[in-house]
Structures are given as structure tokens and as C-alpha cells.
Amino acid sequence: AQTVTQSQPEMSVQEAETVTLSCTYDTSESDYYLFWYKQPPSRQMILVIRQEAYKQQNATENRFSVNFQKAAKSFSLKISDSQLGDAAMYFCAYRSANPAGNKLTFGGGTRVLVKP
Amino acid sequence: DTGVSQDPRHKITKRGQNVTFRCDPISEHNRLYWYRQTLGQGPEFLTYFQNEAQLEKSRLLSDRFSAERPKGSFSTLEIQRTEQGDSAMYLCASSEIYGQWEGYPNTEAFFGQGTRLTVV
Image: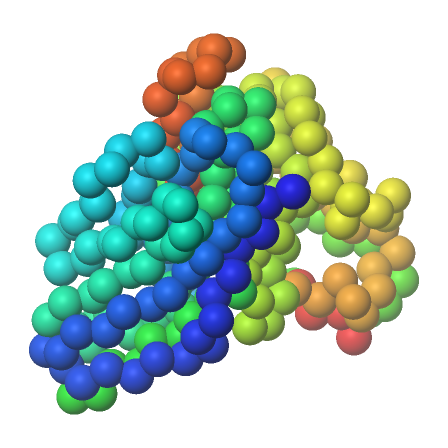
């Protein structure tokens, strides 16, 4: 079974600064997807960024980028130029590339606080 | 279509009562998932459907839990004889899969706002 670990329960960042969230995972599969989801208070979870394991290039979406280290099974998220609206819980998630194994396995989450 | 819709948003029930939640996925999505999220934790997978077929159930889904997706559209999750440990946020998500073959692109899962259950 796959597991996802987020070792930082909470991170604080000054507005306009950069914060990096850590995520490690364990799997025996070679092909899979990794995701970062954002869950604002009392709002639904939304996808921030996605990485396919077969791609060596790190994914980037505007101010969000990842550092994917497949051998180390590490998948960190960098939020640049942090904004007040970035304050939320962030979850790292794993999904098998096998269509039959399509469920998401989540980490425990990291709360991001943004200070004005 | 405005996204995944869940009803009710909040439910307070007495221990031992039965509750039922509903999820309406994005209309063209053939996969529907149920997750449970306790306070301060990440969501945990419960079960998923492809069209009307329930393809996988987690061991978290005890025999007091049952899920259905008649006609492959909306889904219901019923909890019988609720216990205090059932208090959680129940999340529904949907996605579209184009085929049964490995390598087909899997689309992202879209989540609803969840149903928060409190058992008193």
C-alpha cells in the first residue's frame, strides 16, 4: 500500500515571501501521479499542481512549483510571492497510474499561514 | 454545471440514528469517490464507483456503511446506527476516465464541499 507523509503540521510565511512544503511518499510502483491540493477553510479542495512520475521536468503553475525527486520519493511544493489568499491546508496526494487504482492517498496536511 | 454538489452541508444526529448523504457529480464524469476526513487529518478513501458499479471499498467502510450510485448519476452514502466515531467530514469527488487501458489520461478529481457529520 502507498503512504504519503507530510512532516510539517504548520508553516508560516510573510506576504510576498516564499514557503516550501515537504512531502514524502512510499510506493513500489514506477508509474504514478502526485498532486498538491489546497483546502481553504470551509471550502472545497482544489487542485494546485500535478506531476506525472514519468516526467523528469518539475511542474509549474504560476506561483506554484514542485521539486520532484523520484529516487528519494520526495515531492515538495514551493509557493512564491505568497498572497493572503494562499492561506489554507495543503495536502500532498498520490495516485496510481493504473486506471483500476484510481483513488487518491493523502498526506496529513500542512496548514499555511500568511502574515500581512 | 457548477461542480460537485453535496447535500446536506451539515448534519447533526443522535447516536444510533441512520443518516444518508447525497452527492451529485459533474454530469459527464463517470467516476465518483467518497472520502472521509476527520479534523486535522487528510481525507481517507472509502469507496468509488465507475458508472453504477462499485469497484472498490476500503476496509474503513464497515458493514454499517453502504453506498449506491443508481443509474450512474448521483450517489448516496448511508451510515446506519451512527457512532460518535463517525463524526467527520464526508467528501465526494468525481472524475472522468476515458477507457479501461493503462496509459489513458486520467483527469483530475473535482471535490464537493463535503457534508460535516456530528454524532452526539
